[in-house]
Length: 219
Length: 230
Image (cartoon, rainbow over all chains, first blue to last red; front, side, top):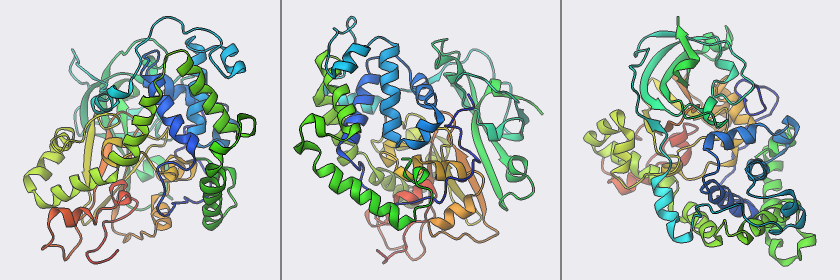
């Protein structure tokens, strides 16, 4: 979706403000927000793609006015409600007013280290051969999907070169909506600055995206 | 965070004051107030945790363990170890170029948001810079959690269209003939920049070299420190 998250090339947000000796967390609730988000994800009711889509589905005014952990918590509430894990009555009471909806796998403290070390690989075997090879010229599709996508607007309908072929990966555009993993090849596609931004592009600039195969057509 | 998007007119110093206010005034009092005096986000997160723990779906000890992991165990020192090894071991550097996931795993760094790694090497003529314009993708296994600026609209919007100005804001002025290669992490590959080894470090061992490798140098918004400089 052409949502607030799709920031590449947007203007007006001001200077980058790097912080000297930045702490990992700025306020205490951010610690709990990180932990809650990971623990709730471990329940297995949604995928990382669905959680990204929940964040970018916040109203743009809300998204831009929220810190990143605020975005996470607002999206987490939406995901928990959508999947029936919590209810509006729970939120109103600020405690568990309704029982848990059936049994789910719960991440316990003693399993955290192993779970984080395992991660969640999303590469998948492919039956078909890749359509493109390194060095091929490709054009990204001109497309405006209303659902989740990982093809940023600034890189649509642009000609680039396949720099690397990475094997099959879960396709976010379907997986975010519970429509299956539908794995596709992923490619690193490199574009010149002029192709993306025109004559006034920074000199000597090359920008790449990692693109699923169905984002691309031969050029 | 959206501080700078919320207050675009604020200077960097003013933002720092805001951070200090957030970190000290706000935070230190969090646990001293009854619930009805909590700031809204503290109350909101606490309510959500209470609900999920009450349903038996979240173990508070798991939250503690996750926080402890990213505050004390997984951070940029992991990545600095990888970089220093690449500087001192040509075989390892070659492995990093062809299979970064396996090479990095051989040092014990695996897992969440580092499942599919790629290392990109700065050269005399090419400087690499990593961004995630669509969210906040970042190689947690080697760099820990991303800094606020990395997740914020100013960096995410400008790193792809005007990286030279962004780098200048980090105090990094590149020669005009140095090419800039920006990697937008739009899929599940996570990028680690291997900065150039500083000159005059031939006599340093891997541990001393790792101390020169800053987090920003592994994102591309900085260079490795020169030997002898803090």
